[in-house]
Length: 482
Image 1 (tube, helix red, strand yellow):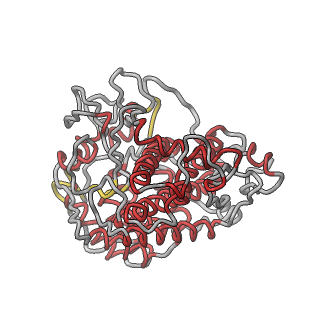
Image 2 (image 1 turned 30 degrees about the vertical axis):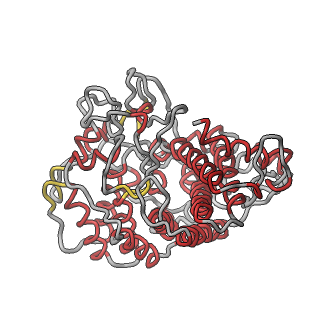
């Protein structure tokens, strides 16, 4: 790990020292931009991918934790998950803000180092840099709304004002277009799920389109991945599905999953939900453990059940720890991939976009294609009401991506796009759909207790400590003013 991070560390030192830019400073031992060789750029690219893995893992469990998908595990306790993001002085809001902007410097560093180099290696690295930056800003905008836009590898100046949310969404799309162009220039098609590919770019763009309400664009991007010459294929057995989450996988469902092979700083997803020592943070709620994969009149024999929950009701075995009691063997659990995008993403994005664009029948057909691979038997009607499809769709999202940090963001997106909660003033008087209030019988997840819960569904607060340093440049989101 020291070898592949050396160039990153020295370049970052040059980029961040005294707030100067990369080409303004040449510390002893650092490699300046004009001296970078193709080998240096490849090492820098590898080092930045190391940082990509870190941010993926750091943010991984958040969407499930805040959405009340977890109960306390044997080594952890919590009582009010919502309180952690309901105050401008909350530690969670500040930690995530600083972490995302901290990792942003690595993306900007790679972009700055490679942008004037026409070599194939540099163009591929540049594509990674733009994709990484887009991914970071996607995580920022879905939490905070509009945020400062930083495009140079320098420390975050607290006086940089927030851009509008619409401007940040457009910035993300611009970076994804740049990433596409660079990967095309480098003639980088789909090499393996371990690499940033045009298909990975397409899926992130499709997600952005969903949030923006560009449903035809989302359908087009998702369809391009489903029909990609890379030959992605949905698995139809529990073993196929479980195989996406273990080291050495050759799954044809993975679109982008950093391989997480390192000699230090291991990333072990299982440690939070399935640790080998019996002490871990999160357990499934009793209601989800009992009912998440239950049969009903529409579907029976969910293949995901055996690969997600075992006989121990306190564990999520979706991320196998390599020991006994797992559904599937995982020979090197510390080297398990980090599934950022899967083929299932494309099907769900396409179905959601078709539905919200007014065609429940098209959406039902798309969802059925996936469901027929996930169940022993599927018996869907030829058509559904809007409300019935929404209930089915949100349940399927939960079944497919439980434990992958998606749920809170799916709830927020649907609340905004389909139920009209687009500002602090117009959602305060509206009710939430039944599936948000109570997803499963006996489970009180998503019970909306008051004003701040509604604000949290929209935006997190801008951290007060950052606002204090900005001398008024960073405005606060509605509902969190002090």
